[in-house]
Length: 429
Image (cartoon, rainbow, N blue to C red; front, side, top):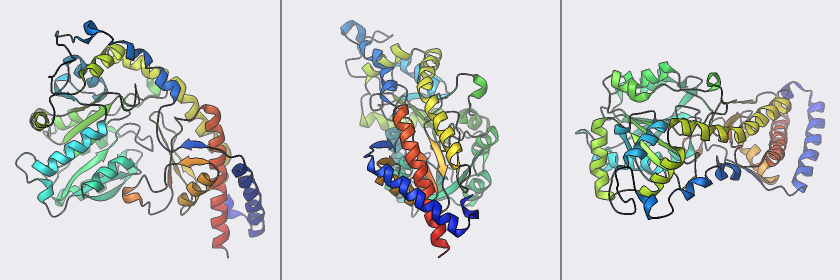
């Protein structure tokens, strides 16, 4: 372990690492592990979808509706059946939107700010709105909360999900705590899947705010890395848990096909209880006459049903699995004797969460940029971009081809070692 080395040995190690880093920098690399984007060969999997709606006859829905025209506010019935697979819910509780689930989440919170819900005051009229943010978490979730002026409160994400003792303490007596972000299966970036107990506690916990909302972003509900059911996570359905707890208004579920078909040209949907659905559709009817029904048809004809989704996602997994296994192998081989480093080994999703030695994450990301490797910014997995330990880094291995990922990981590992060795030396001077 680096911390156990004598100062002279640490100095020699640092000199060698500086030499390795300078050699890396001289290569002129241009590699990217910053965002969880599908690779081009993954996008190729969905190209046949584009030929499923090509002439007037193919623009007709099951009902006989001409999908080129206006109408159908909340989605075609066949599109609701399809998106219910991603939402783990009943089609009758589904609204199909546009291409982005993030837009649906933003709109849902804006409605609560402007109009309130269930007789409660609009959140924009309150002195303060607090929002619980499991960490490490998704930077775009945090960006929405910050844009709306919410005070974000970090809550530790454990192997079981959010620290429920802390969540229950925060919501019990403070009416200004209005909600929580949840990525319940293969969470971004840790890959954590919530335990059944965590889901039930979220559904049943006593909240001072009657309009408390669980924003259940099940972005990776079908994104398994392995085909064997025993190696796939399955999160308990929050809707059923809330139904049993008589708290059907508490949750809003979201999903999309952004990492299934085409980001930016997929389908997004939400699911909710009957009262929430009616309220959402009432406000939606002012903003739109309906979303892209031709795209709904394309997805239905291409993916068809739960079996079609599973087969398609297995093809994605065949591309992604070697990349995640490469990350796990490289980190284990290169960093196991460094000390103070840990990382997740998810069974699905799009990310690996890496915890560097405290105080090193920002410098690692800076060094990686100097070496030609773009990483997600240090602090991005915390509200306001402030990681109090300056430790967590999100690794996104999906976009680069395998050989480029191999190079990027070699550079990343070198940067981790160098940043830590420098920090240890500085602490001894």
